[in-house]
Figure 1 (spheres, chains in turn yellow, brown):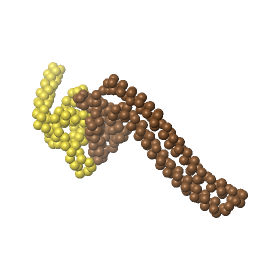
Figure 2 (spheres, rainbow over the protein chains, first blue to last red):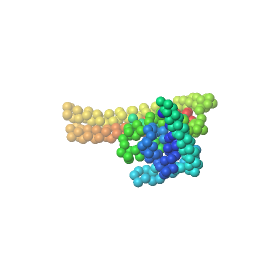
Figure 3 (cartoon, rainbow over the protein chains, first blue to last red):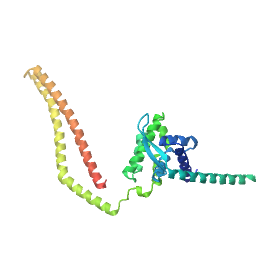
Figure 4 (cartoon, rainbow over the protein chains, first blue to last red):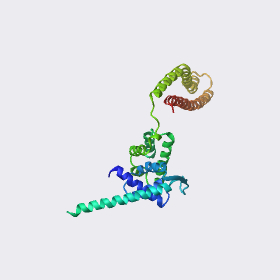
Length: 107
Length: 182
């Protein structure tokens, strides 16, 4: 799949997942790769950008086993950006489905 | 490839970034490895999931705004580096080289002490056995003393040698860093 396209989808998935609950990097990677095939290494560049653009913040929290983990938390700004992306995605997928349906109808 | 090699390669590929930025990124990947291994994965499995370091680094450099990257070296920087390098070569040749060579020479010559300690008692032993000069017991005793002293000095020399090597390397690295400017 087109990487630029995939990046956009990945961004949306990350925002939705940390909206549901705060998560650390590895946890996020596992949750995404359950549904989507991705190079997990590409998650961290995205997370850094989202943090820089203030869509999310990070904090360290102790874990029972081992060193503290860096958790990502959605900000209000991130929440409205997520809503915007979801709307875009829904519109996009409706349009694509429509297109496919119309194209295949005449077969 | 293992975890440390992976992180090392990533660190090199991220050299256009500032040190703080790079350290933070590497910390995240280290944490990822730790969590994955606690999850029962091998280092190799985690690396396969992450993707190659050059893909990660490329991705990272793309995502970050240019301001985060270190400014490229300008021509004046290069001029400064060359002048500094020449000055350092002079200073090192005049003030540093001679003492260092002297110290290394002295150090190597100390090995002859070890040699003497260990082998000269054999001469006593030989004389007492073959020519019947002095007592055999006394020469055996000297032999024991000589070998133990020789081994002790030898170990001390190895230790000193290790430190001389380290100090010289530190000094060379210091020079390189000075010229590079960080």
